[in-house]
Image 1 (spheres, helix red, strand yellow):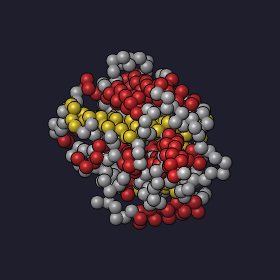
Image 2 (cartoon, one colour):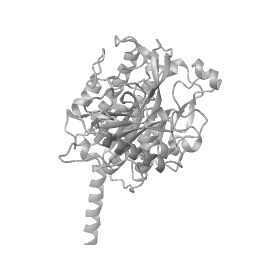
Image 3 (tube, one colour):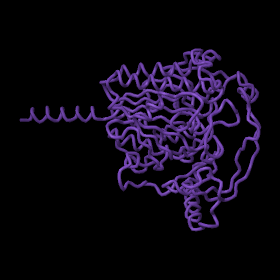
Image 4 (tube, one colour):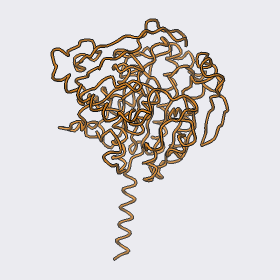
Amino acid sequence: MKQIFFITLLAFLNLQAKERPNIVMIFLDDAAYSDFRPFGNPPYATPHVERLAAEGVRYTRFHVPQAVCSASRAALLTGRYPHRNRVVNAIAPGRRGLSPEHPIIAESLQKHGYVTAHFGKWHLGDTPDTRPMARGFDQHAGLLVSNDMWRFNLVWKKEHGDVLLPYWEDGGIKIADISPDDQKNLTYWATERATRFIRSQAGKKPFFLYLAHSMPHVPLYCRDEFKGKSGAGLYGDVIGEIDWSVGEIMTALRESGVERDTIVVFTSDNGPWDEFGNHAGKTPFREHKATSFEGGIRSALTVKYPRELKAGTVNDRTFGSIDLYPTLAALAQVPLQENDTDGKNVWPLMRDDEGAKNPHRHYYISTGWNLEAVMSSDGQWKLHLPHGYRNVIRPGKDGSRGATQTLMIEESLFNLFDDPIEQKNLITRHPEIAMELRDAGANYVKKFAQTKK
């Protein structure tokens, strides 16, 4: 009788393990909201992302809490706000990154039986205890910082000297200092390792793949087979190779027989770096990267999960990147404590269940250490606190950086449902809404007042 019980229990546990989804997170760098169809109508084709959207759900109101590389990545992987992580702006080489006291999704999944891999850009620290393989990843290959933090960037070189930009692989340095020819292969190398990982793990333990491309962050590079093929300049060519990469990932999942059992997440860390003109993407919203306007913090998001998400649908429910960790953890049957993340499990929203409500009351948006905006959790109301922001007055061309000016915005209340480009200040019409959001912002600042160091 005992033997039958244990056999039944073992079969149940095996069934549970099989039911736990694989997770593939594709995270771009500085991609604009409209860079890929069907979110926009760019002058080049993106058939693989279009197919991903047709087979999944397109989310139109997905936000990051800070529109800068390191801050956005830390928030994504920890489910915590930048002030709590103490990671704001972009981390320079040699500076300590995300502290191990803040657990990331890879560590939680790894502890609960997942095989994990990160390929591409990291940018959460290059000191030993902050590198990917010290943070829950079984495999890793890529850059530990942005691809412009190298000696071929004359502005960077002037400020930092001849700092080497190494390419890392599985805990060691493979290339001591990458060259322009190496940059051409960054998207390919990350994709090749990612597809190899999928094929090697399929049908075994559940896996988590974090594929964080260095592109389309400047400087722009792609392989020769994509150069000139988009008909829309180098930026279009780079997007074309990223689209190819998405196709390779989906093919690997399909051919490995795990497509139905895999959650695929495709989005960007923030909006475009407008200062670089034709080497940046386009957004229908106001402003760009490193601002708290929608052009900086609203990212296109597509999620495919055949088991539970209806293919080819559009979802306009509001949620944030801090919610992905707790949501994916719940789907992976990984227990979290209430205070482990600032984010919440928003799967009922993502599935568009009838009557589903956002478990948050507000979302908080910052630039650097400054809290700059507070948004209602339904995404309708957004209060900008008074702050300065960088505005482009002359875009650069072909890789050169343009000119900017600092503008100021007064306390302003926008109805994003009616005015997503944030033009009409309604603060005098709805003072009670402004007061609620202002008070929420004050409580947030008070809560995190001791985190800045």
